[in-house]
Amino acid sequence: MPLDPHRPEKLLLLDSASLYFRAFYGVPDQRKDESETPTNALRGFLDMIATLVTAHRPTHLVACWDDDWRPQWRVDLVPTYKTHRLTDGSATAEESPDDLTPQVPLIREALAAVGITRLGVAHHEADDVIGTFVARNRGVRAVDVVTGDRDLLQLVDDAHGIRVLYTGKGGVRDPDVVTQAFLREKYGVDTGAAYLDMSVLRGDTSDGLPGVKGIGDKTAAALIAQYGSLAGLRAAVDAGDPAIKGARRTNLEAATAYLDVAPTVVRVVPDAPLPDVDPVLPTEVADRLALDELAARHGIENPVGRLLTALGLA
Image (cartoon, rainbow, N blue to C red):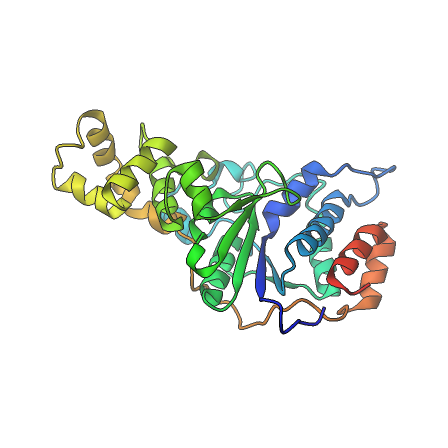
């Protein structure tokens, strides 16, 4: 799809694992024989990209990848980080449904054959790849981040056209379009940075982050609003602010060690060592023979066709 010089540039960043897990659980398994390779996540993921490209008309696109879904440097800071997602008996392997595992290489193969940029980086999660692309493109072009992970709401920045298309309830067809107005209405915080501070206080059981005892979304947002930031709140605690008393003071003081390290764990990396690439949408299929063979082998001609149509490559 050639770039239109009159069309504003937009970068679409996909939290790939978030999307293909959603596809796996949301798209029916159409196999008639269980000896065949499952394809529901593959089909669903390709259709998701087609839907997103059609609806949001990006000029650039990256499928961001988890080369390391649980980086050791994060675990060193918070040992409980994502421990519940580990395969039994493993210190590194993420638990994944048996029928999803063989589809992930097929997704990589399809992206490469179409010519869609896919990037991950050692010792970093897809979130960090996304954070780095956001930092590199801030002020250059608008950015939409597609994810079912609330952690990435920290990237929302109206001034620079950075939004999150949150797929939590509506999926890619009807995502929550998260801007700062959405953050204010839904969470009571004004900026992505304030959301990050709030999320550290609140914690996240799905990521093994305990948060501060007795502090949920509303209390965390109120404290960040009152003191301006997590750093401001902690300074007030250290200074003996009389407004912070009783169990709240006790719990905040007890969480000192956690609060020292949690912001580093929760904050997405803005400067991961990614190669310099220009992830413009492909203007031709990168490997038509490989794509046709993949489609025929797994019976995914229809989703491949829909994706190529969305990209203007059919």
